[in-house]
Amino acid sequence: MPAIEIAALTKSYRVYQKAEGLGASFRGLFRRQYKTVDAVRGIDLTVDHGEFVAFLGPNGAGKTTTLKLLSGVITPSSGTATVLGHVPWKRENAYRRRFALVMGQKNQLWWDLPAQESFRLHQQIYRIDAAEFDRTRDELVDLLNVGRLLQQPVRELSLGERMKMELIAALMHSPEVLFLDEPTIGLDVVAQHNIQQFLRRYQEQRRTTIVLTSHYMKDVAALTRRVVIIAQGTIMYDGSLSGIVDRFSSHKMITLDLAAGQQPSDDELARYGELIEKKFPRVKLRIERRAVTSALAAILDRHTIDDISVEDPPLEEVIAMVFAEVNQPAST
Image (cartoon, rainbow, N blue to C red; front, side):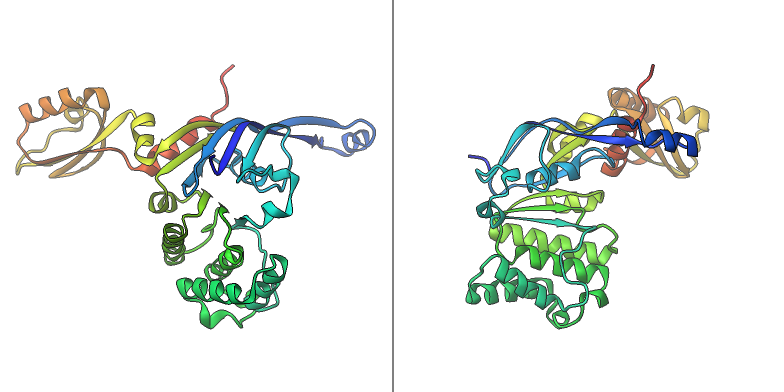
């Protein structure tokens, strides 16, 4: 049985539309206008035990809503889902002890108290044996190298240090499933790297099932092999990271190192593809995939080349292109 099973899951909200102006506001007291927002539209998905899956999508795509549904924070409009055999929105105590949710923009630690006091509170909430609590806390503190910060009030910690403490609090009861919503948002490069290393090491050791949402492609590339792209509340891709480029990119990047004295004009280079960069002796072109073979043959026939490379476009560029297309308004 998969760790997570989702079938035809939907979530819609009825949102009040407030009109501008005093008169419209007064009329709204008696006759309100609403519209329906479909945050999640019929998602089907399975995640096996021990998988590390990334959810990608533009803002408003339904990623966070899906995590809230799976953690039981909200109830769906229709459809079914089970996590570890539990229906999340039944909010059974047995389920609460088996998962954890970390949201990069929400705090679960007491702001004015040292993090170790919040850890003790979690021990009581989850009824963790004292010896197990000490062992788990010490292991996590050592992995994240935050022992010197345990007695410092949370409000005095940096953003990266607070996120480490949030992760420790979430993992104190050794959850079998971990939901991470933008865990590195706002962190600097060093803090992001530290969080990535910890999550990769922890997941490899514990084989915890992890579902991650992030806008940082470095998070995704460093941590996951399987990516699910959600757009407008539906799944538009489910597969490997490398498969995203193959499916959504229609071109290749060609870099040419021209021999001494070779300086073709812009018009000549444009015959082969779109000119991206020209800093002689190096030239970069964007060429349609289907035209790469013929373009390379023509280039080699007409020019002397010292070196040539053919690469896929950067993953960030492909993802940005996909999101931009999704966010374009439908033509009428």
